[in-house]
Image (cartoon, rainbow over all chains, first blue to last red; front, side):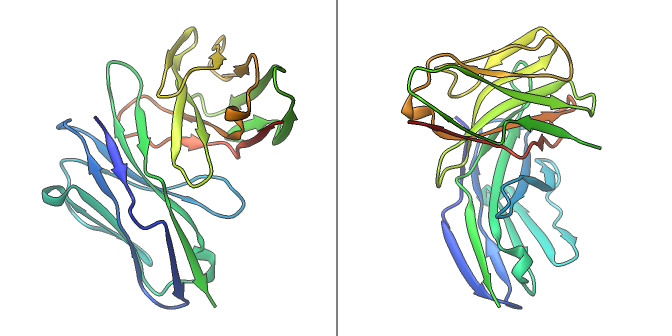
Length: 116
Length: 113
């Protein structure tokens, strides 16, 4: 069975602090993809990053960085020097391809509040 | 580009009523999806489609129906609305390929009273 766990339900940080959002996944597939989405208060879902199961290189994009570790089945997301605009719900998702279609399994999300 | 467009944005239904949530995309994506998001929960897949004329059930299909007559449109039908269907509904689309991100609409907030 596929499962994504985001154990942190809510996090509050003061502006300019660093924050890490945890994501742990379960799958028996050998090929899979991991994604992070941001859902700001306005409600839309914004794609942030994808990572395939064969690429464990960490990635950095501006203040965002992602750490993928297959050994611990984790795909954690770090925001450096957080800003108020980072306040949102962040979802981690596991993508797999069964016989047809691309099925995503979402975690329950982590609500991040950045306090000015 | 409009991307994925959902209508309506908000709707209140009475128990037992029916309605169709509309979804259209202009990115020529083959794959389309319907999710529901309950408070404090992640998104659950209701139905998906890999192309016109082809649909399949996701994790939580009961109480819903879909059709896909064109590449652009993927409406979701609620036949007999129940309070348990109160949720935010998201439509998404993507290119084929396991590595393709799904692009989401802005959601439809539906309340069944």
